[in-house]
Image 1 (cartoon, one colour):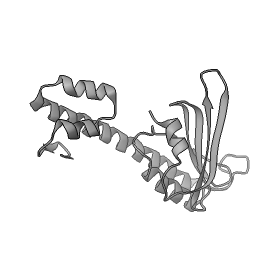
Image 2 (cartoon, rainbow, N blue to C red):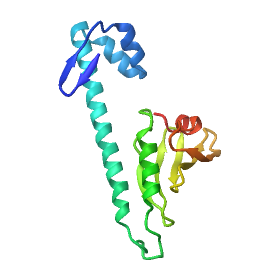
Image 3 (cartoon, rainbow, N blue to C red):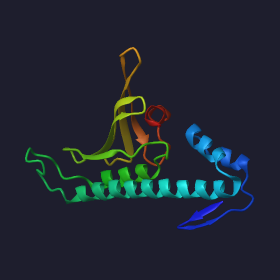
Image 4 (cartoon, rainbow, N blue to C red):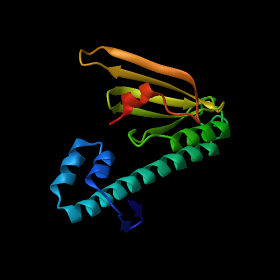
Length: 175
């Protein structure tokens, strides 16, 4: 299967392949309820539209983070340092490796020249944040609310921005 713009081509697209692509039970049910000829096209249409929306959201996030390079000394009127180019570069590298199962986060600028992203009330997380200091690594913290009300804290430092995202963070954030 290939999906390019509005042109959709399929070759030997089978139910088995489709089921491998469909992780979501709701989408799987929707897929099986369509007739066979329209099923493949509708599925590709849905995937294409969701990918397009995600790419647009990621591009907005990247644009916002790049805009932080315009911040000068004392940008917050409380002595903040300008945002470092290396922290933006590291953040953009990591964001480019963000799995599709992770919702798009909100960007934030730090007062020490770092940048970050955060999520609130996503997955089983009450709050999660990733910070890039510009040294080629990222740090994350996350709080998880258990069904009994207990709050668990997770985190890790020194994660290579070119490597995979931490499995604990992915599990907490995944939709």
